[in-house]
Image 1 (tube, rainbow, N blue to C red):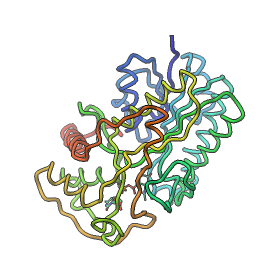
Image 2 (cartoon, helix red, strand yellow):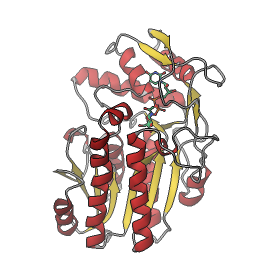
Image 3 (cartoon, protein in one colour):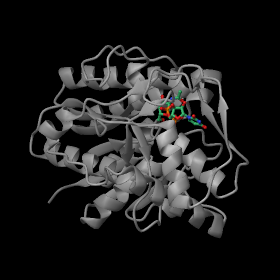
Length: 332
Ligand code: UD1
């Protein structure tokens, strides 16, 4: 019988979607989350333990008490501008916490580790679509703190029997179709989240950051992926490692992108109303185009997207936003 899965950050936006899917297929789960941005209501399965993924002794005792077999590590600080203002907090919450977690894994003989990384490790890529072996040159502490974690994981895997799947997420959006969990980060800055808040009247306008990029309509292009497809990648990563599959670093994206204007057109169409949109200057550090080369994950994990549809992504994001307005809260 498979052991328990330890999910750090399982009360957060992406972690809670993965917990839901793991729970639905009958996995035993223990969720470790400090609830700094996550919400206990988002944890639909398993036992929630409130604490830090960087607490070596706590993790060690959870691994022992729950007979943990595998670790999925989502817990992290993820707001890029905040990382620029508070770099040490990002290195502490992301890099140092991952170090302590890895030490607890090594100490307890855990050899299956799935890590939430980010396209931010690529910085401003020279070539798009960007492949996993492209140079990693993050341009903010968020990306650096994740890249440093990647290195530790890879070095430990070289030195021990730990095997890992490191998933580099592109632009994640949407929520589960039933709308019980979603994204509720305060002071959101991500495009689809901000546009949903504007649509629901929670903000008075949305700014397009840059209309002079060398793209098809002058605005930035991103590879938006539905959180349900991302969740599926984690389940497949777990299955792969459980049967002895090799470690890998994998992009999670669809391999094509949408411009800011295309996203906003979709939001307006789905919402049925025009949004107050202003054109503004470029935001520092934004690449013109960021698209995943997405064939490796399909090859290694057999992953296939099922929600590759901007309208569906936007509709689930808008539905969630309006549910949150209704109940005056939500989860992160
Ligand atoms: C951001 C991070 C990236 C991280 C990812 C997931 C930055 C600079 N990048 O990606 O490192 O991996 O989140 O956490 O923060 N846009 C607008 N108006 C807005 C918001 C966004 O025009 O109000 C545009 C942006 O200029 C960009 C696109 O929309 O072209 C997507 O932006 P966003 O959703 O913030 O994500 P990224 O910046 O791609």
